[in-house]
Length: 247
Image (cartoon, rainbow, N blue to C red; front, top):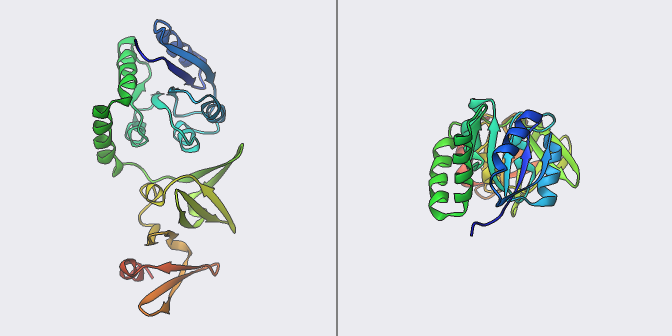
C-alpha cells in the first residue's frame, strides 16, 4: 500500500492552482490540505500543517518560492511550478525534486509526482546531492536575507549586513546596529554570498568587506579587525594573509 501524502498547492494564479488540483484528483493517496496565493500564506501553512509535499510557484507577491523555503525550518518535498526557466539551477540548489515549467502536460506532471514519491530513497538522495554540488557554483549570489521572528519576517538587504557570526546551528546577522538570529549554518550562508563582498575571517565570522576599517595586533601571532562602527572581530591565522591583501 502506498504511503499517503499530504500536499499543499502554492500559486498566486487561480488557473495554475486548478490545473495542479485536477492532475492530483485521480491520486487517492494524496490529500490536498490547503491552497495558498502568496508566500506569507505558504510559510504559515507549511509551518502549521507540516505537509509532505508542496507544489510551489516561484514568482509570487511578497515572498518568492525560494524565500518561503528559507523561512520554514522543516522543509517538505518540493516541486516547483513556474513560468520561468532561468530559476532551474536555483531550484535544485534548494533540493527541489523537480521543476515544472508552465504550461506542462499531465504526463510531465506524473513524472514529477513519481520523483516526489522517490524522495525518501537513498538512491535518489545521492543523485540529488550530485546535482546540487554541480549547480552550486552557478547560482547567483543572494541580494537579501530573510529572518523569521515569530510571525514577523525581517528582510535584510545583503549590503546592509556588517558581519555574520556562527552560533551553533544558528547565525547572528549584524545590521543597522541590531542582531538578527537565523536558523542556518555559516557555511550554508557563505555559499550564497558574493565572494568579492564578503570574506570569512574566522571559523565563526564573515564580514562585509565595505565595513572593514583596519587590522590590529591582538596578542602573540594573532590579530583582530576593527569595523567602521568600532566592532572588533578575531582573525584566524589561516585567514590573515588573504584579509591583509584587501586592506
